[in-house]
Image (cartoon, rainbow, N blue to C red):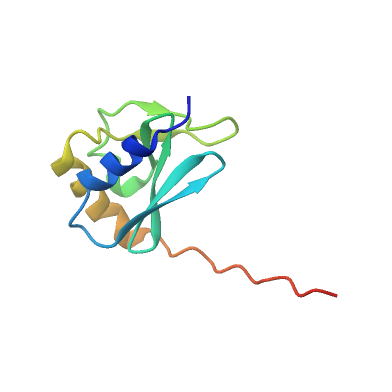
Length: 108
């Protein structure tokens, strides 16, 4: 089951007001960017956050799961709890690096 457009828009609404929020469809699912930083992975209508030390205490009660085959285990974020979701993003956004820019291949 793929993530619905309605769900990804709901995710973005839940964390709105935090910064520039956008999403991008990737490998059939979605990555949510906050201030151009990839902070949330959304697969099968489930929101995943990397297992980072800076949120381990706050996420200790959270379930864990693997967003797609071959991926590392992630925390599952309760996106219905908007305040908590924003709190987690406030912690991870500053420590998440901007993605490296890809250099375009030059034709021969």
